[in-house]
Image (cartoon, rainbow, N blue to C red; front, side):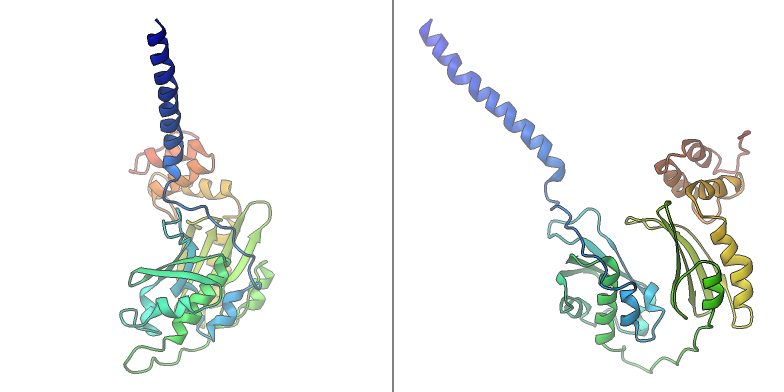
Length: 288
């Protein structure tokens, strides 16, 4: 009897310790390999990108910076994406963009897994990271070959945009923040086309967008009749999901049906999400 009691006293605590270790490992497993996301510094200026552009306004959309979610094992928390038009300013196949970006103040580490993607570890605000990437790109020099033709200046639409509640400068992106709704509307002028978009915080910031062609003779007409009415009709999440469902059964405006359904569901509009999933295949919806 004493021997059996002694055996139990030895085994039972070990079993409990093993169970506790397994439970601890199961709790820790989902977080293994992903360092905590560091807090970012506030932006260094209202528009840090403007000072880095050197008149090349199209770099605002050629070079973009977003949160990397989740953070990778090396602690990279930001992804820099380069559009195809980056070749106007540098040859992405030969330019040392990673080295030039790593030399920028506030950049802790840079990795380049793809020709048009850079992963960055930094605590800078996203606008400052975008500005640093643009400065790095411009320091690498233009690609070999004939210099690009000078581009005509973009038209001055600041007065019209200010009257519509947007802030910005000539040739730059104009923004209108919607207080209390955590949404921002952006209108950008590029060579030959104009884009209007609605953004929300987070990695996938563009909720919906539209673009139109323009010429210097009709840019004000395009803004007044197309872009500004589009923005005025999408000033809330309810207005956006209603716009998507209103297009059924024939189409979902400005977004793929599956993506629109996921966004509506994430916002809590479950009936809209069901209709978008069910009637995205051109079947007439029932009464709302």
